[in-house]
Length: 253
Image (cartoon, rainbow, N blue to C red; front, side, top):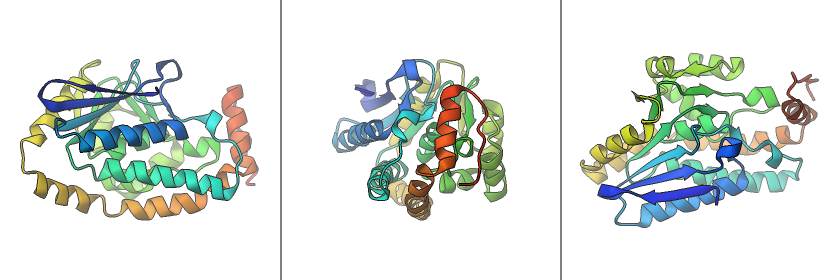
C-alpha cells in the first residue's frame, strides 16, 4: 500500500504517503488510497485529529510522471473528478487536519500540503511549484490555496518562477503555520491537531467551510484545462526532459 495509517494515543491518526524510494509520488492510485484513508478516519469515532505526512524524510515529490500518459479527455476528466474528491475532503475535513512536511513538497506535493487547513514544516523542508516545468498548470486546488495564503501577486510569481521556498521564508509568507526541528514535524503537527480538537466541532467546521469556499472554482478550471495540457506536445516534452534530466524545449503546442 502506498498510503499507511497509524492510530496513536489520544485519538491522533497519522496518514503517511509511503513510497519513500520514490519520494512519495501522488498518482491516480495514491489519490484514491488517500481519499479512502481520509474517509475511514473521518468516520472513525476514535479518531479526534489527523496528521498527513510522507515517509522516508520527504513529504511528496508531487505527481507521478509515469502516470501522466496521453489519454482521452474523458478519462483525464474522470481522473480529475478523483482529485476533486480528495482536495474537497482535505480542505473541508470535519476533524482537525494538519500537514507535517519534512524534506521536499514539490508540485502536487506542495498542493497537497496547502489543501490541508494547517501546515507544519521542518526547518529544512522546502516547497516548490514545478508545474510549468512539465508543461502543465497547477492542480489539486493550488490556484486557490496558494493565493489564499500569500496573496495573488506572490502566488503568481511563485507559480511562474518555480522558485524554491525554504521553510523560514515559507513561515514568513504564510505558507506554513509553524516550524519544527528536522524530524519533529509529525510530533508538532500532532500536538497542534489535538489542541484544535479540544474546541467546539461545529463552529470549527463552519469556519473551515468558509475558507474553503473558493476551491471548487479552481478545481473546475483545472478539470477543464489540465486534460488538454496533459495531451499536449509540450507536456510530452516536459515528461521526456524530466526523465532524461535535461531542460525542456517547449514549442507552445
